[in-house]
Length: 411
Image (cartoon, rainbow, N blue to C red; front, top):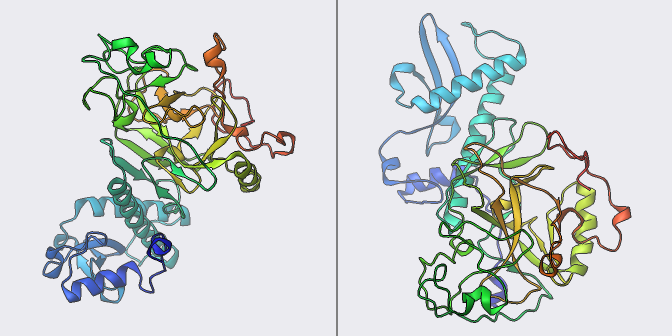
């Protein structure tokens, strides 16, 4: 019974604000609601929701953290010690006036302007809570930030952040691995280290940058190896090392991901994670996703078209990475503790140096130069995943990547 109830959840009949008020009145600390001991005695500005000017003095309507909206109060500018919130409010105020074609004078703000400002303030709170949830859930060094300066959309619904594959129904594999006995897996690999055991080359250089051709597999050291966690043949398993930002795109591509740090060429960036499902289940879901105009299916057909990764509802930050016909990320198949060739880990490496602030992208129809038998195994046709039997029936999705050599359609 307990096992069946493990993933069970019910909706709370209280809103977030009502729960905060309850915590404050009962003097209960709650990290999830961002209620601390300071909230029991101090008045904290949660957001500003209206504005008026009387002669030369500015007044702001304040929503107090831990208090209901019925307890909002008008405060003069001199009483407010929240410069960031004031700056955000003024930006939202200018946007609202621009939308309504009004000017800022001594008259009260109209209802549409006030509504816009409050929606923006509440949106920021939701995105901030989601950002905190993502960083609590992730198990990697790189932090995740969230920005939406485009519209009033909040966090996506029905998405759970995961750090490893979620194995779906009907997926059966054997997690078998052998370990190495190297003292230096890069400079002095014994019997070729882990890669040599599978008749392949070591994938990384001294700087832990990939040095083999796309299409060649990567075999990292694993839990059975004698080397430690600082081994330079442990790259993908270290997780995301860079601070990244999930942001709302301005050209209708939904959410995207940009890097907040410079990423050197050939460096590991992230894995593509999701729910591992059978190819039959992927076909069913693929038809449904086509009708919705989205695609999150990635075929794991390194040696056989048996399994597919679906990142629609379970995934990591790669869920939000967009397509480009001129991408800066390249796909590699990686094996660590699991050597089942039907179930590789999908890793993205930088094809070139990526600037701070640049959007991260990969090609949904990425092709590999077929220079040897090993690289012929790899197929990264992301956009056709789960639809191998009926590709002609697919709805053509327009490509909006905007690069000079854009193919105009995702497939």
